[in-house]
Length: 216
Image 1 (spheres, helix red, strand yellow):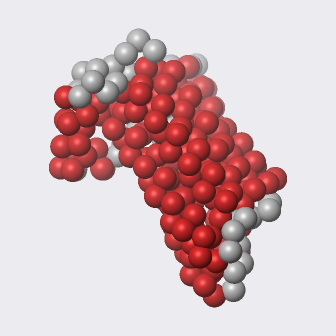
Image 2: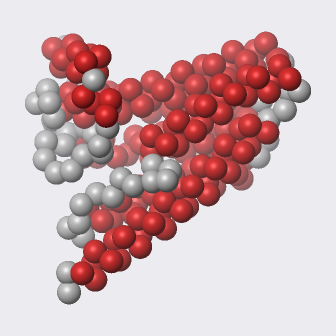
């Protein structure tokens, strides 16, 4: 969460792990800025989305390789999302334009990844639907902050849940490729993300309405 020195932050258990704190300290000691880490997350997302797309264009062996790469880049995107905030807040390297780079890359990343999955399984509309609802969850959260309420990071399909779902689907798809070469696993995963993100946006919206009414 680049540039956020104050305010609420997404609760992440991984932030308190030794490996994350050690890696954040190393990154803080370098000339790397939190904004650059946030920008790198978009590169990871583009590589993930591209890998998902290419996995639908190739034969079994190359398809498996691209699915592995897609899963890896999804997790590297999350790693960037973890480290940018730690370097900015714990490392004290927050920047004036940090709030922009905190949010903008995440929205681009969701679009690149889920649209890439959709094109890879020849169902682009479903991919774009998952991307749109993913962006909507963040919009409602930021609308809450803009109206003076705490950020609502609740699920059932917040960012970490979306990435866990699509990463697991990429790895399970390897077994599907070996079995019958289908794309059912990724199709089901996109439906889960799309519906789950829609429910998440609705739930956050209803919570926000209650909070706004409680102030009057």
